[in-house]
Amino acid sequence: MKLKLSASSAKRIRRAAAAAAAMAIAGVALPASATAAAPSGGERPTSGWNDYSCKPSAAHPRPVVLAHGTLGNSVDNWLGFAPYLVKRGYCVFSLDYGQLPGKPFFHGLGPIEDSAKQLDAYVDKVLAATGTDKVDIVGHSQGGVMPRYYLKFLGGASKVNALVGIAPTNHGTTLSGLTKLVDHFPPAGDVVEEVGPSLLQQKEGSDFIKKLNEGGDTVPGVKYTVIATKYDQVATPYKTGFLDGPNVKNVTVQDLCPVDISEHVAIALVDRVAWHETANALDPAHATPTTCLS
Image: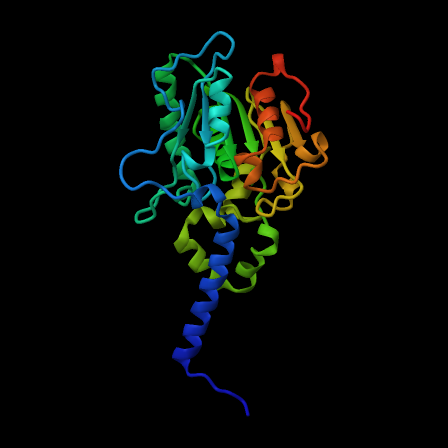
């Protein structure tokens, strides 16, 4: 016997399937850092960073601005790496961007163009506080690609010495094949768009990605480093994070430490191989070999 569904029942099934697809896409992108329980009320501790009285030293003359990933925030994404840099004498600052109403702590969801404007204002704030004329930027996931819009379209290149992207979505992502759900089931895209516009903007082949990379991946005057892991399950295929152009260094952590099993979240959150290679990018004159024991 063939089961017939009413129009309303079929509509509910389509919406449920679309919601499930959207949750799958957003869920894979969700950094573990964003799942950390946040204290109610007040600001969370930042262990020595976001100190606006910090003045860069002669050894580390530029402040470092950290840009979190999609669904991350300025604290949880950097609980390991920010103190790592502070202990090495850097002035370190992290911003929240891409906030949407009713979604506290889970940021990086708004349109990437708007997030780049927030970065623009934040860099100016850091430069004014530290009395410097340039910053270095380190970003994870979307935080590695969003600053490229700032550099290319908002005049950021004159204020940035180096950009380090950790597992960035520079050329879009297939999200381990999950973006095919949007291609084959358009209602899923509508639901994902409601979660946050930046999700589909990072999809391989999106209008945003095409515009960002048209005419070349880089802009003059900025040094670029990309640090990727072959076990990335979010920015996929992982080599799509790599950039082409002058002043570019592309690194796979397994080339430095073959037993490194970090995936998309761990590479920023706990991977000292990636941290050490980032420190080398920030201070290439004093770089030391990056190994499994870094």
